[in-house]
Image 1: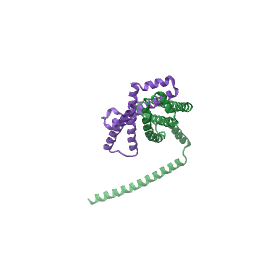
Image 2: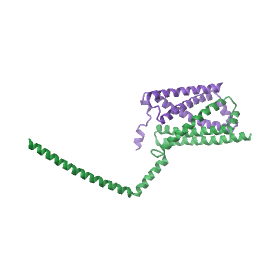
Image 3: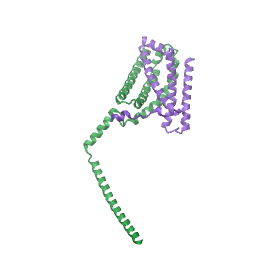
Image 4: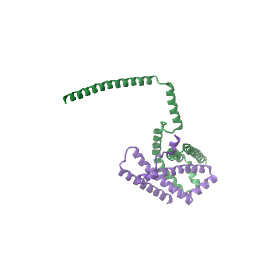
Length: 180
Length: 128
């Protein structure tokens, strides 16, 4: 019985010794790896860096996936939302009450520079806010990448044309108002 | 790669969930957003038509003041009212406020109420 116990203890001690040896070995391996990583960090293969940079540039150009611009768009969506609160309320109060008036009254009203400036701000900020929203919806529901890119491009094109038409139209109305 | 991207389900997989006030209002936020986007393009056209004058102006004015135009404007007003109120709700969430389930439900009902109130007030002003 006691012999058996002794051998048991002995084997345990042996195991422990082996374990420490193993640990030492592991430690050594780890140190070696760390050294290798240090070397790799200080002498990075320049082609790897180029490839990484190109990949980032590609993601940025396509703006698909983690292109690193998502946080900025999120902020723009919130900032435009905040700006649209007073602009939308102003718009509701002033524009819809003009529905009875003849079209020429509306034209004259829009030609007043302050009204033109506020409605221009409302339309442009709304278009910016809207393109972000439309894009998110299209990214969620349009499965094929080709159609997704095409539909987002179409939304951007329509928004750009609307913005251009708004600015030019308001400019014309202001000049007519001042001239007339 | 292409096989995976075409067969995997995309995130808002609506038909598998029982509709609740939270999900319905979330869908409504997007739907009203689409309506408002179309409305913004319409607004840009209205400004352009006024600047162009002539038949563009008179046709647009006739269209806007027809019963179809009034119906569209009424729907657009509700869309604006709801997207505005629910948008404020979203901004509070972004600030980390109002995440408890009962306050989410309460703010949802408030957004719908606010939208209806805003629509009614605006159209009383328009009609009177």
